[in-house]
Length: 221
Image (cartoon, rainbow, N blue to C red; front, top):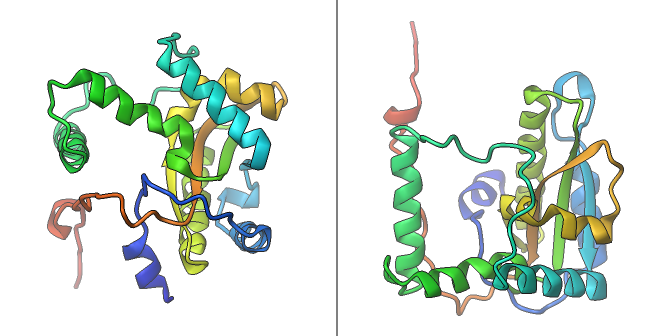
């Protein structure tokens, strides 16, 4: 698989089979991803990978917690600005409509929307999860380094025939995750990532992208 195919075939998969991900493949991906760029090579990512019984128990507790309506853990960072202006808010709204439309869920069907959302904490059926932590003392540029690292991981997973779904939703139950991970106090959970083999029987709508002219300006001579 070449780089272009990896980039264009990568998407947030929300339906995985129970086929185990080989540890060798994970180690190849994470070893190569260590070469992702970071400012002054400080490599700010702190990664935990969970599989097997520990992940199954974590998913069970997280799903039960969310289904019971327990309040979210106090946020440690702002996921989206409260007033997400155009065109960003428009794109987010369009994504939500496409997502629930693919599932056959009406906008007014709150119960069905909640059931779909709860699948986040079951990793959409995936048997492997990655949790990305960052040191609290680092700044916004280092958070951008996390994005480059995570994208590198996701592209390398495609090269292994695997798919993924990055999920900030895990930060909402960070204390539950911490009971399994026991992170040092200086580390903050940024996101989780479900990893596995796609369940091709799960319907989806491929989210579109803005036209190039809307996001890119080329100044030439």
